[in-house]
Length: 438
Image (cartoon, rainbow, N blue to C red; front, side):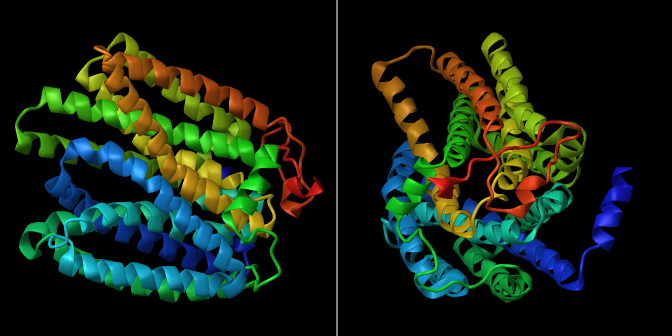
């Protein structure tokens, strides 16, 4: 039945819609392919320059830099339009990548800046890509297509990682950054046609209500629906960071040899990527199709709660590793797909600018929240650090379940025709409050 419905949906697409879908897949592939190259280079150079103990500090430093980038984004987007904004960001990425290839190991402060920059720019690119997708894809099509979009991004990440794996020693880590340039060029080409075949106007000045960071925050504050999305995103990222810290702590104490540790990390990240890719292509669609959007959203924190309980009562290295693999596999697959579906009923300015504050600023700044929590526990001197973090994770996940339950009790907006379409199977429709009524 699922395959027949999927085939019917694809056949009913117009030629322009099919071109849009192909271009969106190419964009997702290129963004994650670039990130698959840049991330390990940045991580490796940062470790060599500052050491692992410095990570909480760079996570905290992301916050003010993140604020500056989002403020500039929201100020200039209504003035120069979507297309110019995207290509301006892309030009900055190309320029900084080239400079990093030449000077990353020669300027002491550059690795610190580059680590922050790569964390933010990938989210900015995805922010604009998904805003176009939300404005073009209908809710009824989303459950078929969103997993595919994420799946092609997963393929890009795997290809980028493999390129890094095979070529790092042969051509040098910094030279790998030049290998991302062809992907960025293809991204520029694909985005041009993506915008052309989308249903979004390239708005100019005066046509949008959100022109700076403060107005974006106000739009979120005035919408219970956006506040729930914000709370869910922050909760997921704080939990992910805490589990990541637990994994690294357990790894450091369990495997002393550096080469064996590297081998183990490679294997674990490989498992996470494979699981994420499988969920992106098949799991998200099947879960939404059979359980509906609301129950699918509840599935994530409930499943992760079992991991938290396992880490509490069986705090072994294997259990902590399993919890880490699970949450990493869910983060950019099932969680990403379901989260993006929540933005479909919103107004265009909310999809582009209010969403940027949530999915770029709040998403990355959540690491700073987790870092402050970890540093506070270190200062206090907790002897049982890992069990304490497991209890905190358990409480956060329990709160997440409550957030999802409350979010799906809100009223549907008039902002989009798609709000009348439900992904539930004989269940109450997802209802969303209209922020513009206030």
